[in-house]
Length: 292
Image (tube, rainbow, N blue to C red; front, top):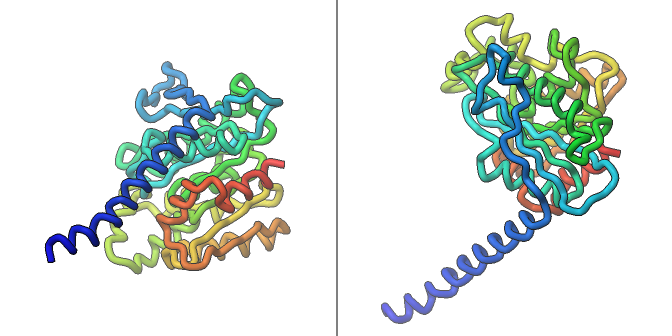
């Protein structure tokens, strides 16, 4: 019986090892096809709030030279209190963006409890402004920057593109925006209701002030003339993301700019970003469309 058990156990182990080898070979090929320029500051060191660990971005360039390439600036998620451009997942996304022919820009920003969400949005806006000003030096086209974010990063991306209070008075607009299962589009409503267990945790990044909840919610800053938006929502994502994304969609429709809106059947919140591991994923195809 023991011998038989071992014989039955070996094939799954062999398949697992084979899968690991394939994945590592794939990552090696991706890395060879791109060049990463790491830890570029997007805030000057003389700024009073400069953070030497968080005010940094990485640039992923395709190795093959070409005319100025479209740019994707990616903002990571992480519940507004975690995440970094140095996480393996986001490095993977950067390499795939370069493989797709984009100049990929993957950023870090300050997190709660160090700062509140409006300050995080300000960091992201400064990263976007830096990209507009400097990406030409790295082979990118500053007129074709697509802003993309997942989860909390999607909420921050929406704030930049809808003009949260004074952000647009100081910084540039992207060419287009792709929101991947965005969180926080309407935190005023969410934190007023407090319907779910552990919702009090969000009073750290958003504070206890309803005025800040509104300031940090893209839904209340939308106006005509915003860049084109695409929203991709998981069919099995959190109810709050579904409801706030639908309100966002309806508000844009009222303004005469209905976004592309796709619900991916069966997808939960985390798989909505994990799907970016696959180079053939529909989100990359949508990025190409938005960059045209």
